[in-house]
Length: 491
Ligand SMILES: Cc1cc2nc3c(=O)[nH]c(=O)nc-3n(C[C@H](O)[C@H](O)[C@H](O)COP(=O)(O)OP(=O)(O)OC[C@H]3O[C@@H](n4cnc5c(N)ncnc54)[C@H](O)[C@@H]3O)c2cc1C
Ligand code: SF4
Image (cartoon, rainbow, N blue to C red; front, side, top):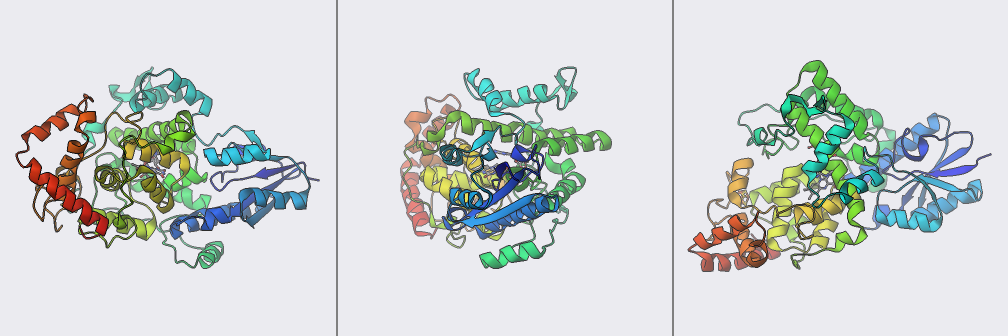
């Protein structure tokens, strides 16, 4: 009979990782739990719920077809689900991979689960801890170079291929005009998908796969049609295409259907076989072995209380536009929120330079913004949202992660996006009824925080720019109107 119960979290769906790596169908019973907290506890985006639940159900069915005894249990909480499995299988020890959030780690530890090391990343938690503990500041670039050397990726004789670590300077092109983007890959739906969609009362898009086979198809599609062009347009925001050349792989990397190791291997293999552009391959590799691993490492390194930081004392309530794209005349913000409403995803630059920029410069409470992002994105997990939002997006950590806040006015957005043309507002104006709210708020934000920012050598030049504004009193008044209008959903 069974000797262990293996608990598989909804973000550990991988047969060769975590507790399944050495699982034995003869002696291990497998349990997945769809907890009520996970499905109804918050205002979750239905596309996200559909993706997570349907992926887990497909995964459970796959394991069964491989000879495992699997129970997919619906219960009020994860622990209730595990207790129900114990009722059936007996008082067996519960084994699982180290959970991916502080909360679940504490719950399962208290319950007495036995953990095996989390190997869903390329960098173990102790290894990252070792790196971070040896640093004075936690600069991602330094971590990334150490990763390249440690993993031997894009390296020759201990040096970076072509003698450069970084091609960022070549990769900041604005969106191209009259460009033909490759068609979107659509994923077909099966019986399990239909059941989950019916349970949720929701018609999902075809944007996201819910099986490993589908995730692999997405990887193949990225390598075939997008990888070569990834670098140059990675920061651009187009009006006629929501994906550009981004990989759309984050949901699968985060729920376990894909592992970073196999994604890197496939990308490097294609680079070597097809001679793809190094500036694109390096840019993508940087995201996966650099940013992704760094963010996960920092989540654990910075500790559980990091999520509560609010270094800029931001107290504004979440703006209505975040939950209803019609509550703004700002073309960029309205379009990006509409994209999220449609498919629970938008790429990095809209997340950072549009949504987060708005939250940062309006002084929106970091925890309210974090909760919203966590609920709305298909790829959101605690470990990835907390450092990205608290550290990168709204600078609530006083600069532990990023040396300066990512605030910008309309000039940057009019260069890098196609949204300003046809917008009610004028990106060049900072005062007046048609002034771009981002431009007004950018200066107002610097003005409000000038005493702190002037001490930061990376910000002092921007802050000193305030001295050149002859219309500062007028700008302060306009900023008040903009903030009131955003609160009312009329700007
Ligand atoms: C405020 C904010 C919130 C974010 N929230 C999430 C989130 O909840 N989940 C998530 O996976 N990513 C998050 N990101 C990072 C990044 O925006 C997404 O990983 C990316 O847009 C996913 O699309 P893609 O797979 O097409 O990425 P690509 O552009 O193709 O990049 C490849 C991969 O790199 C990794 N990556 C790149 N940047 C980051 C980063 N900053 N942190 C972690 N991984 C990164 C992702 O795994 C991604 O799939 C956030 C960024 C910001 C600024
Ligand atoms: S003018 Fe300002 S608000 Fe309008 S799209 Fe451009 S940046 Fe956004």
